[in-house]
Amino acid sequence: MSQSPDQYLSPEESADVDAALLSSSEKFLTRLTISSQRLLQKIAQDSQVSVEELTHHQIIQWFENDSKIKREQGDNAGTLKW
Image 1: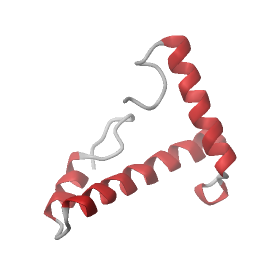
Image 2: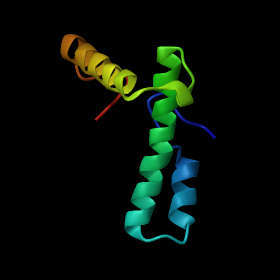
Image 3: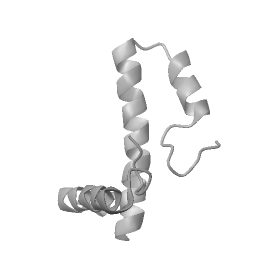
């Protein structure tokens, strides 16, 4: 599976979702879940805990930190690219 660090759904995964026998809304939720899993793994790594140990406070803090980096360094900084 090839993917860049800021890409949370690889082309292969996206193609697999497209091929699945799911409705459009189910495909959207599937993509969201896969990319969320990858993002949670990144947050856990940055927080030096396992995904299972992550708390909602740590997730919120991570998003706040990522947002702060973008405000200070520009939209291309940080992890999330919107």
